[in-house]
Amino acid sequence: MALIEFEHVSKTFHHAGGAKLLSAHLGARLRSRTAKLEVFYALKDVSFQVERGECMAIVGGNGAGKSTLLSLVTGLCQPTEGRIQVNGSVAALLELGSGFHPELTGAENILLNASLLGLSRKKTEACFDEIVDFSGIVDFINEPLRTYSSGMIMRLAFSVAVHVDPDILIVDEVLAVGDQAFQAKCFERIAKFKRAGKTLLFVSHSAQLVKQFCDRTLWLDKGEAVLVGTPDEVLNAYSGKSL
Image 1 (cartoon, rainbow, N blue to C red):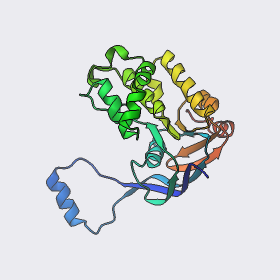
Image 2 (cartoon, helix red, strand yellow):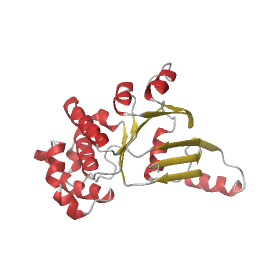
Image 3 (cartoon, rainbow, N blue to C red):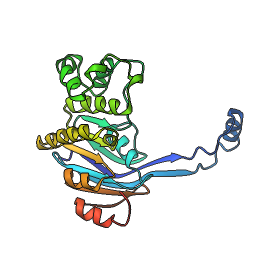
Image 4 (cartoon, helix red, strand yellow):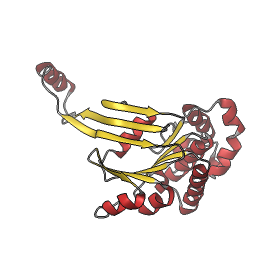
């Protein structure tokens, strides 16, 4: 049974139009209540499966629909059309600092973020020291998050996510923020995650990382699935474009 399954999935948004005063928005809505709104397809008729223990990369240019696809997998939004099935727990590293609060300390944010990812307080407290140690920011763990650099926030977010031990780990290019030494540490943990038979959904602009970690690759372009295949097959077809 596939852990992630998309069947003819589309996601649309309505164009908001330019900036207007509230009165202008209300007036336009009253005048065009029955008018057809312009629809933008962030994803259009996308189908694919990710099997247990498989690592799939998502590639494509800006605006291809990669972030929308990940948001659908995590349940942050729902499809307009089609069916999505996700079987298993999910930990996602999407936007830097998502699930964190800037006024809370690093330690408090560990408890908050782990809870949002489904880890009980008891389990979080049991692995708290490991999370802090892996992040490498023990000297700042009791400082407010607003004092952290983007790299420190990424360290903390990644450390919490991998210690939750999910069935599916989703990583959206956020590792590019960290320094080289911590990136190497993260990549080793991802490799360990993969060796344990877990499933990875990986968005990256690095062909090297896609080939290193992924079994299959999905190429999105303007919301549509262009090709699904091995990393070499897809990257060769995509070679005329910049990852």
